[in-house]
Each structure stands twice: as C-alpha cells, then as structure tokens.
Amino acid sequence: MATTKKASTTKTTAKKPAKVPAKQAPVKKSATKTTRKKEAKMESFHAYKQDVSFLTTRVTIQTAYWAILSIFVLALGLWVISINDQISRIQDQIDQSIIEQRELDAKELQLLREQVKNKQR
Image (cartoon, rainbow, N blue to C red; front, side):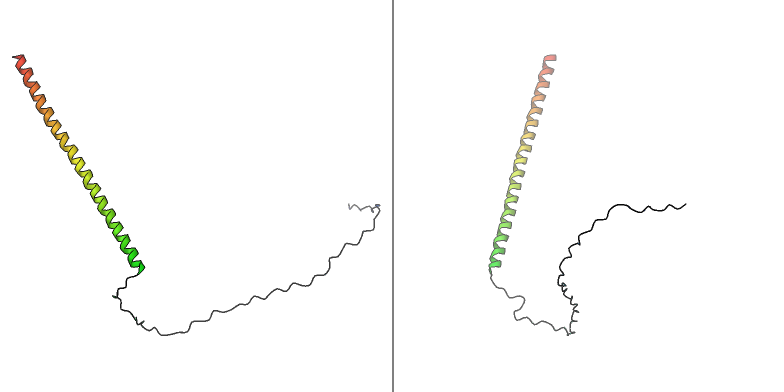
C-alpha cells in the first residue's frame, strides 16, 4: 500500500539570486623541486701530515686556566686531608679521656670495695 504524496499547496516565493563571488585568479602553486643528493666522489685516503709535532708545547690562555684549576683542586684536597687529620686527633683525645676516666672509676670502685670489707670485719 503505497501512499501518495499530496501536492504542496504552499506558495513559492521568488528567491533572490545568490551572489556569486567574483572569480579569483587561480593561485599558482610552486612546484616542489626534488633534488637528488650528489654522490660523493671516491677519493683515496691520504695520511695527514702535521706541520707541528705532537709533543710540541705552547703556552696559551688555556694552559693558564688549567694550571689555576689544578692548583685549586690540589689545595682543596690538602684542605680536606688536614680537616680529616684534625678530626682524627680530636677523636683520639676523646677516646684517651674515656679510657683514663674508666681507669679512675675502676680504682675508685676498688677502694670502695676495700672500705666495705674493712667495715665488715
């Protein structure tokens, strides 16, 4: 059962013609150039001949920088060693005083025990 469409009875209004945009000039797109990498020419390897020998020494500003830096590092190393020595001496003094105090305490304890024995007799 097919239904048929009713004819539309609405009024059709005249549509204004749509504004057509002005024709623009076509944009030229640059063609991308594909370049091939040039292959390196094969050359034989020749040993480089140095004008200056390897063991030649020259004093430059970098030499001064390295000298200053090395002196600074050595000075810091000596400083750390001296601090370590001082700490070790202090610890030795503390240990020595603890040992002496224990010896004195042991002698005092022995004297107290002898006094207690004498009183008990």
